[in-house]
Length: 529
Image (cartoon, rainbow, N blue to C red):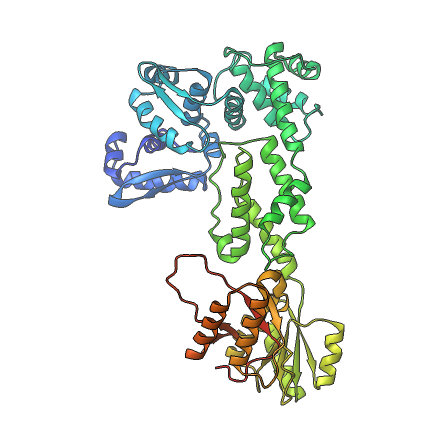
């Protein structure tokens, strides 16, 4: 365990960063001894906190898990003690805070701005000239904030009649209560302690709820808070449970539906809905505005599953607009989305390989299945066999590795000759990445802004453009003047074709919304470049 010098070193670094020379002067040892102490402290803390060097050879203490850190040192978190006093007392001066906590006034002056910045999203720490500091929240949120502190450390603020023995009995008795199934007993006890600590405040409670079961638990534990306190506890727990009951799978599914992307329609399944519902129920039933450890970094999730990361961020932001709750473990929804994507991406993607020779086909089949994840290659040797396979399933891609010329209507065909190289594998990966869009364009483009044109094999690009503009005129989508200008622009220069998608010459300096129409063709234009 840590000796007195090492504890003093931690205490000094909790207030502000310091250089080894300064710490050596404060503790009466050499700078080399301070560096050895820092190594030993980091080893003893085991990841709960860490002393690290910053710029200009200054060392600072970075507390990662505050609860475990202060439990290891067998003392209370002074930040939590300060915050508890601010929540319990309506208004208090800096001198009163320093006297109550037995800490220097300079420490209080340094910590108050940090608390205001650290918890800016949870509450407003305000001040009144000539009166002091106070937490500007309503009674309900004040109870929850204080309950969060008592959940971290039930003895963070001394309460009459509360000791470890009473707390143990109270936890045991509250486990028998069934009125609030989504609220754990330790959170229930924390709410009870919070209201008990605020018993000197004006109590806003109406009616006479049935507090008999709650009162019996307190009496059996050796605590008599009074009917007014228990009424407030009962009604606050009832509101939390009522909010949790409103979080249903249908409620979550409705929010998920608004976030679903056409490219990922299968990402939302029953398991994802159930996992998110359970997570939100915990967040609503037991709000936690003071996470006990630093939230995990989502960078790894963003790198591995960018789609899951984006969907989870949108989901969380949408929920925060409709409910004022802290979403604990904000990276968990992202992991739920990633697992849902993984479940559906793990399904086999059928690829048909049309080949001439069995030997080359076997080599290519092994190369594709090795390099392209979650695919199953079916080898066929004739167009007739290919047609038979297509009758049984819809392949995501047909790799034409033969001398046969397939019909132009086969849009999901990628011609690759001989043994497939690394460049060919990349072509296959790129093709599969957009296969879903090509196979189901109606999911991405609304009917009023798109249509299919069956162009003939000998039809030129000018004839295609003329026919397309005629159809758009018939739909009153464009005017006669716009049709003439489109045809004129297409005749002026070569049309840009990217991945067989024609990009029209559509630049303009007119400050008005741009209209686009998506037209698919039956076959490629013979003059495509």
